[in-house]
Image 1 (cartoon, helix red, strand yellow):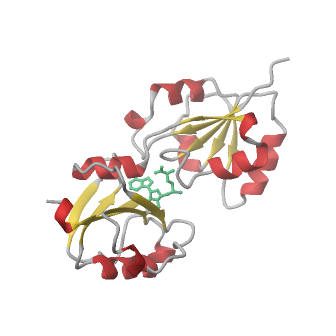
Image 2 (cartoon, rainbow, N blue to C red):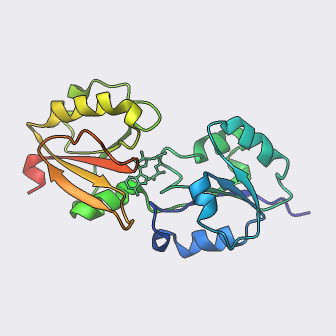
Length: 209
Ligand SMILES: C[S@@+](CC[C@H](N)C(=O)[O-])C[C@H]1O[C@@H](n2cnc3c(N)ncnc32)[C@H](O)[C@@H]1O
């Protein structure tokens, strides 16, 4: 009997046109769709069972276990699975051999594209779940730094980073990328309120000309 793998699908930064055809094919073949509410609601045409993932990730993993190997389980994640997503706990729990990953366009890809700067050599950090365990000033030597900064709980660390890098780096605030209310700005100081979908880019002044 065929053992069906878990497919983890990157759904891009927001707009449906940034979901790849490979991702769409996997989503439409799903028998069980797993993900956050927004992602589950993005594909109303898919007649699959749904497992909503909220704050209790272990509960969602347990619900997936009931279908493991028997139904095509598709886990939806924002952006690319390889960057701060549900892919990590799913793969840790079920193992790499039980999972296949379909990459997606990350919010970080979209952020660099929106300012026309390549991301080769960029340092990528997240203040989404936790602020990085780093002193902001220690990042001043980075030429290109992308920060996932959509969680207001960690705004103090983000503000400290902006203050530490203001003299040496240009700061781009990239909000709601690919969506109708997308906003990309170069700013001299960090706005107080950031959208829940925000990537900050810090680019050394001499290379952001
Ligand atoms: C849990 S992480 C998911 C990252 C995702 N796997 C990726 O590759 O973009 C959530 C963070 O992604 C960023 N994000 C997701 N969608 C975004 C968008 N459309 N515009 C700007 N930032 C976005 C924000 O920094 C948010 O805090």
